[in-house]
Length: 319
Ligand code: HEM
Ligand SMILES: *[C@@H]1O[C@H](CO)[C@@H](O)[C@H](O)[C@H]1NC(C)=O
Image (cartoon, rainbow, N blue to C red; front, side, top):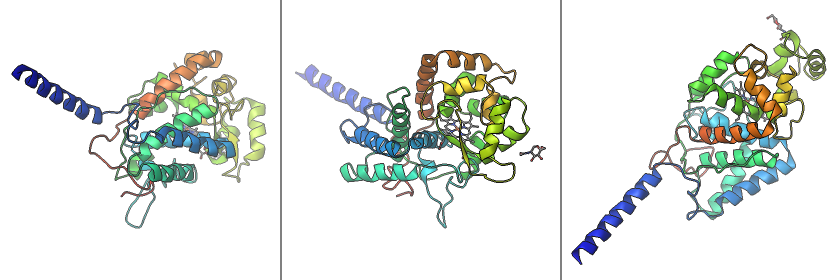
């Protein structure tokens, strides 16, 4: 009898420790009991938005990247500036550029109706990024969940930690290495540029001044990106298939049709990344599976778990 009781107590302690351990890390079934419709709600919100405008998939994917690279995936990128709070939205890589905030707001408000105070904004970003990629024909991956939301943001870190489109390949490799990524991860993640658009202002110098660009490609871009105006005019980053999540981006690079300086740096700059670009250009399956694995890794950047941070009610402000 006594032994059985002791066993029961040990068993309960064991379970308890398991629960503590589980709350301190991410898992794919985090909302299984607390908000069973969470994933469905996010997917529906993403699909509705992408059906209206396919580019939104790219914008949502980028939001998750710009969140994770600044003090981890904690939804800091979503916080609005106020008279007493400085967020990340005015940082150089973000201002007049990031979009999709209303899509996240709409998903969040639906989730607050069905499961108030349960689903974090950081997790919504991670799932929306995956669903966006899938919506444009890219790979599926199981998203790790259980991130909590920050109560802080860092304008400085957003300015320093998010890579810039004028970087050379060595600086791109360092920027990703600072976050624990290999050069190989960096190339795979850059494949996100197989969807979406960029503004004239970020690629103007390249199409007028650089020589490692296919000549007629540069000329045709100049029509929509004059040398002295049209800063916000858009061009697709992947010249081949900007609305499909495929390996068109890498094929573009192999043809010297990278849009931004940083894009073309991955191929033809004498760097060790050339062979990987060629491999992805020839083998879409290799790219898609490496991309999915690298996205899981990116989603694991310093999440807040346990009792750190909070579950925001409104993704734009701390509770
Ligand atoms: C390798 C370093 C990277 C640099 C230098 C870079 C830079 C940029 C720039 C300058 C733009 C255009 C912004 C504008 O015109 O307003 C852009 C767009 C985009 N970036 Fe990156 N990026 C990088 C990596 C990534 C990664 C890792 C992801 C996601 C995993 C990503 C996803 C995107 C997407 C999807 C767009 C298009 C957004 C849209 O159409 O709204 N980028 N990037
Ligand atoms: C081309 O390069 C020159 C010299 O760096 C610079 O002054 C000029 O603004 C560049 N042109 C464009 C269109 O960016």
